[in-house]
Length: 476
Image 1: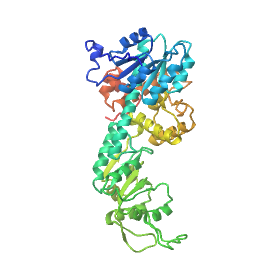
Image 2: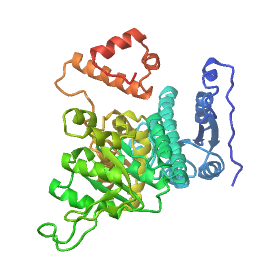
Image 3: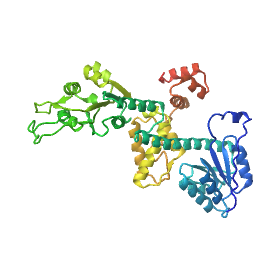
Image 4: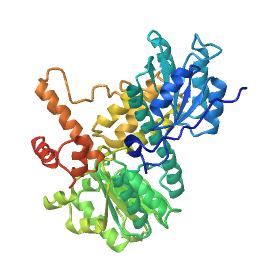
């Protein structure tokens, strides 16, 4: 094999554009694979200010560089020697590169009349394609988005490893709200104090309870969960405290309840706000005296069980309305962990989506490598009312039914998630888009008005006026 025609072009730090990237870490790496020196030179000079550039003229050189260097992005001409007039060599190069690292984003160069070949490359896993002659500014936009996704997927791999070491295997997140959750989990796990986990349905409250148990001194004991809202009131008492033989019709045998089954471990009471006031009294007594009585029994049974509770309702409001006991509220609410809704977790949406896709694709034996850029945009726009549980269900369904290498908005049933609809006036459509952009920017800045105004290109007073007009609430 000939000596690879690869070279690392270190950007000139003199220009204003290049100065703007100082301090932002190493430049993303891009590999140009094309046997036309003029095209390589054009791309090199257009990209070298923002990327570390490598070059190759054929498949062998491309693979060698790809294996030796941390390549994030590839610009690939499908017409490579010895099949310069066809696409066989280019497609084989694409498959070889992705087999080495599926995270790499490959942008295919194609002629005006070769769209079918470009689409075939996308089906094989290419990130995108661009037609010749290449418009550098268009290519820069494509690469910028591709580099962002590469970074997200790399961060996901790092998070998986970190969470594996720290015991948060099923909880993926790097957003400030989730980092706060992780910190609270570590702190409360060291003691046996009661913890109340609050949050919307589907945010992962049981995962938090399991993480607390896993980090506690009770980790070798059982973890027992019960959904208080899913069991009829007439049966819930027996489920919690057990019953003696003959305690009621159908009680043919003595049965231990969840408190006893969780002896030496942790009992998780999900949707505790749905518990009747009568049962609340009995629960309070257990928390105070650490003893239970089975239904139909008269003997007090000591229990050594830590209680964690969760709810998606406003217990304080229930307390004021007389539906929840004040003494039990304060007994359960020694420490509160608030689970953020998915829509407030920023890039965690993509981290979770990548994690779930990898899990379900492996379980189903499907070769699905990622999401199209349209699917990613749709996931970022969507409000996720069902939170992580909804994300799980959509991705599981898509993996099962899709025939695509990368999932599309249609696969995720997110092809109509925009707020603009047919029949809107131009004024209504403009306002809908404006509101959506403002809300998304605020999420990115974690509610920081000054940063959001800067990103939106408006003054703080103007942004405040827009927030008032659209009744958008901020965290600050």
